[in-house]
Length: 420
Image (tube, rainbow, N blue to C red; front, top):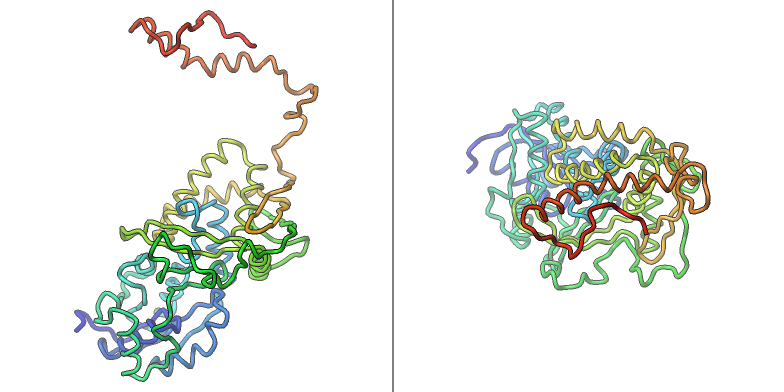
């Protein structure tokens, strides 16, 4: 029996087996009215018949809302602008979807006068933290119910038995191997044969991308235009964020772009293996980074790369609605004011190669770096710079000789630095 009670609960609902059986479970265990909420983040055919299914499972109503544009504009693109990549590979497709879903859960709960929210995240994963930290940050008065931490259902067979007992309509079977998450940004797979990190992912597991060896034998070029760090055009055609990512997904899938296989460190302390497909996102990250190389000065770019690492940790850990993330966003958005221009990339058999970039804010000067004769840079000036830059090394070596009487070098010359 539950330690607390609830009168009305809003459930983060996907229509899958777990959330389908949560509906009657909440009614039976908490005696509460259940309202389902599903965010359309690009799950495509997974959303078909969702409202009817929720009602048939026992919910009083079901909200299905198209949040794809908000997802990209307010969560995906800011993360990309920060250059945030978790543990060098993961482009955070599930991570930044959860705070948006949880935010809307809170808003629906407030609108409906609910006193609780529920989610189907397991007690072993990261999503439970992402959902609950968002609720705590936005409305800590709401009770949080996490059935996987309470019920006696321990696996897929138990859930199927519970669904049959309570006449819950489900399409799932015991044969389903992978745990998947799909949205406009990525498709993830966990479980099944992937639980052995030595096992190569099965060929038929990849539902989006063409295998690189089966991709076209000729490269394809794509040109992207960014304004203030936001992608706006593909091959000269202006597009909204949803259409743009959809088109880049098609291109990336065609050429086998965006597959990663990572053993990642979960927040809860264990390692897990995930295989992700992020075709359009991989193209966007590559293009955006290339434009930043052209337009940001050295110190800003290097510090921004440090910010990206920390930003990725915050997003992965569910700390979206925090002062630190907002403060880092302020820094990132200032750096993005000059990230305007075009980037050209070549797509070929799983690879994205940056082959051209230009910007009105470019800091690259051909007349500075040319090997031909120029009037801008006097190469003789480099001698004095090297003397000063190497001074700490010279002083340390001199102190070693004067103190210990030995040096790391056989015959150092301390009189002068001479050019070859």
